[in-house]
Length: 152
Image 1: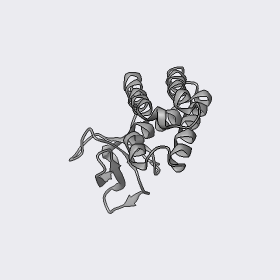
Image 2 (image 1 turned 45 degrees about the vertical axis):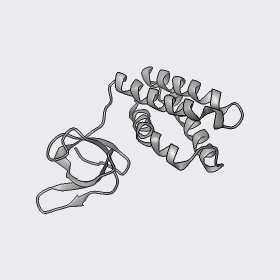
Image 3 (image 1 turned 120 degrees about the vertical axis):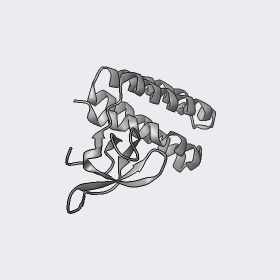
């Protein structure tokens, strides 16, 4: 594998962190024998992982459905705190996002992802939801973003 870039989602396939997921957080580190990448694992540990131990994260459809469900559950918990119709609309758009990913429609998935992301970010910035709450959906949302980027 080569050309990993910051924010690429990866799975560690060997070594101390085998089967852990995370994202690349920096550029390639060139050593004498091997290249490594700084990776922030989903448990928030940071580690330098040899390139040979990394592969792109490719979630199965059931895993993507699980991530969407995780985000929807969290959104439903704060729906009554969101302004206007946002609390009712976001769960619907998360469903549309799942449908778009399942249909492999990159443009549609991108629109739905951006709609949800922008509304959640605006609600957070305006104080309707806390930064701590946003942290509860960070990893599932990163996985959904990565899945959308990987659609062809």
